[in-house]
Amino acid sequence: MAQKKQGHWWVDMRPDGRDGRRYRKKFETKAEATAFEAYITEQHRQNPDWEPPKKDPRRLSQLAADWYELHGTKLRDGAGRLQILYALADRLGDPPARLLTGADFTRYANARLKGNKAKDEKPISANTINHELSYLKAVYNKLIALDLWPHGNPVDKVSKWKTPDNELTYLTTEQIEYLLYQCTQGKNPDVALCAELALDTGARWGEAETLKLRHVGKGQITFYNTKGGKPRPIPITADLEKRLRAHAKARALPDGRIFGPCYDALYNALKRAEIELPAGQGTHVLRHTFASHFMMNGGNIVTLQRILGHHSITMTQRYAHLAPDHFLEVLRLKPIRTP
Image (cartoon, rainbow, N blue to C red; front, side):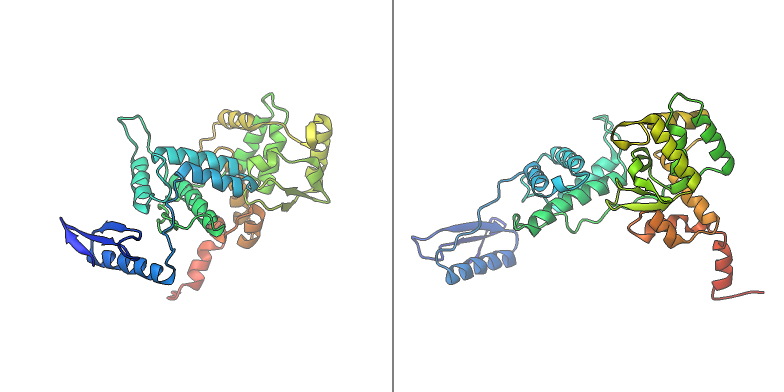
């Protein structure tokens, strides 16, 4: 029977008699102690040779390494995720993976969101925390699915932190023309056409910059190194296709690439054009510009979702308010109408 001693409830039992295995454990409540006692008794009733599972000694960093070996190597960003997981484990003190709790991660996250002036640690964004949480959940879930982790997912019930809606800036027609002009004023031979390609297709800069000639043809290009991992075909004009082919022939780069590295050249062109952008937008402003003008010119939100390669329409809806009939629809469809 569970007994209370010095403020705790204790279970001290030998289900198989005094020569059998001894179980001794303390609990905060009588209910927990009674449940443990009943559990041990039932296990020995069903199987006299039963033994409790051994405690898994793996620390969080080792769990991350096991995840990478068994699954992460298959992911395009697997190596990057592993480094983030190692850094996360280090900041948490690399605890035994079975002892980590949702409260532990929550306290850690709240501390990082505030920063630490004494240690010269700047606050990080909620978006960064949410990425760490997603990666950590994925480690536990994958090992559970592979029957290699019997202890459950300690962060499964931790909710993501709310992130503010980022300001989405797009370029006007005049700014586009001036930016493309500035792209021709530097020494990089690729940046002007690469920027035009991104503006013409809504591609991410990395997708445009790494495009290969064999992925251009029959009035379209197909991006393969996409964030979502799926090929994404986009129609282009005959003129743009012709210029891409001519540029690739003139550059003759290895592996059929049309452009060399030109991210820094675009950044410098943005500076010369004196285009001020919110923090973190940089090359992404070209993608926002495509999407914004697409909607302002009467484009369909579902078509835009496919062009941008968004898994969820929620991401694409950030541009819905730019549709020319957006406010007219409000007046036409509201429940109380006035003349």
